[in-house]
Length: 517
Image (cartoon, rainbow, N blue to C red; front, side):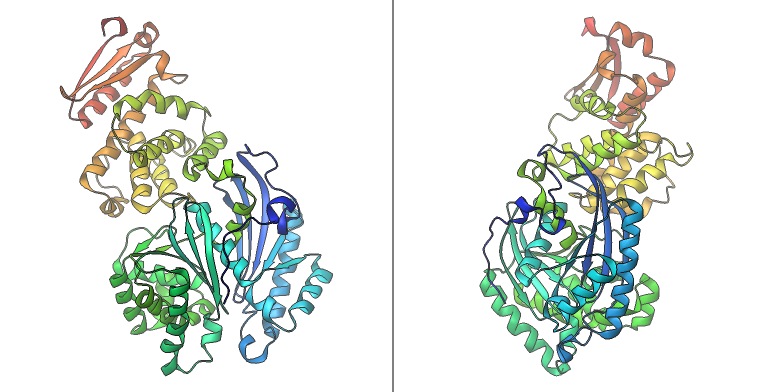
């Protein structure tokens, strides 16, 4: 176990495992294609990032459950079959990277390779046969990078990051965009297989109690990183009949999570596998991960348990980001990139937001960012068939890789975009997801959608050149004040959409010339 304070890292200057700086320009908004391979105790995964620098998209993602660390605690050596499978995977990944024009790949290895006696030999073999150099990190560094990955997708995260792998489990404190104390433990499922079942709870609790005291944590939010945790969260969704299966920012309460752990313990794992599409190798480790998580809840008494889909791989990117880039909102950056690459008129989203802003004079910043994101995304599914654009918008918002967006936020964004293309939501196949919102939030999303529906067709260049909106809340009157150009643009369809917007606001719609206002 290690205790390390937050500090600057030479990788910021040297490029670390990438061997080069990724963001030489602090104002960089776009990320060139970057490939990262994570060689873990259980899986070997290749991810290729692309797109918005602050909210990178997954251009390519492939995983092999090699089991490299299976049996390591007993033999001190990498699993022979795991070595073969990992080597085959790395050869393939090297060729894929070459074909994508992103060679060389950045390869990072964790507990299995760093602890195995034949770890250096495996590194040499990989280098000789694939040309890939493996960068082995220690437990404290693994904890730090994993925590940085959480910060990449969850900028306001505050609490304890808990990252479980096959042979180890790392914890780190995060707050104010920084990583604080961190520690590593041998609480990975492969190691726990060697502990007698009747002694496991006490064994786990001993380590966790020490960690609780080290990190001075009790009653805080815990962020879970790692495949085994994600499977448990997916099973929690299954038990609760939760309508949205996006794992990132899925939030669980302690009592409900304990109910799920009890349910998993009493269930047939083969049936659970079939219901969730979980691989056999991953499901085999879930019961042991459940034992660890049960003790995490008991010892740390968290206020909430949240899932982060981002970890070490994303942490490597965050490592290289200058402060100016880290400070940007990942949701807005992803929406900007989508608009720049997919909208008919890139840049119109900002003008649309400014045109609609008077309708939302007192909304909190958390809502303002959703309104901005919706305006940026409002035209990104225009290529879809008109009959399916509303559904395509909703699916994109609720299921896309978007950081800094909780589940109610996803549904709010999706519903507003649905109403951008469709007046009514009645009978929608997405209706089960609406229960993640309050009635007021559903109404607000409809108003935003109908506002975008009007504004986007009122003027395709700049709505402000055609008129302005004024919301007289006390009188419940919505005014559209037209410029001479706007008077010429105001056709019957625009009038119908303006009136639909006023109706959704439970207001009277009034159209007049700007000089009369």
